Amino acid sequence: MSIKVEYRDGVFEPLDKVEGARQGAIYTAFSEEELRDFLDTLGWLKAAEKSFDFWDNEADAVYDTL
Image 1 (cartoon, rainbow, N blue to C red):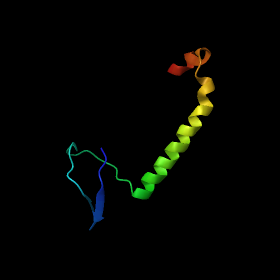
Image 2: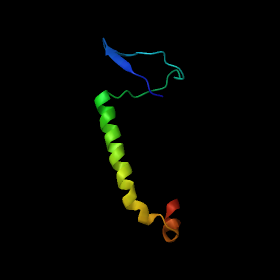
Image 3: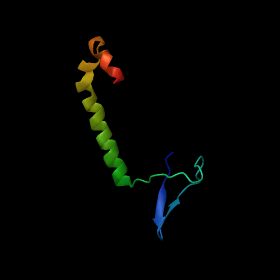
């Protein structure tokens, strides 16, 4: 679930109607800057994934379950 919130008077308030949230569940809010940084990092990790393709072979399959 992803929602936009506003911080006002010490409380994070949803900007839209929230559906599907469970009573008592703990959720984490990211600032726009933190979310951009996370997505940038995710992009770099995805790009680096190719460098590990050599491990995707039958000879190394025995280690997949470790």
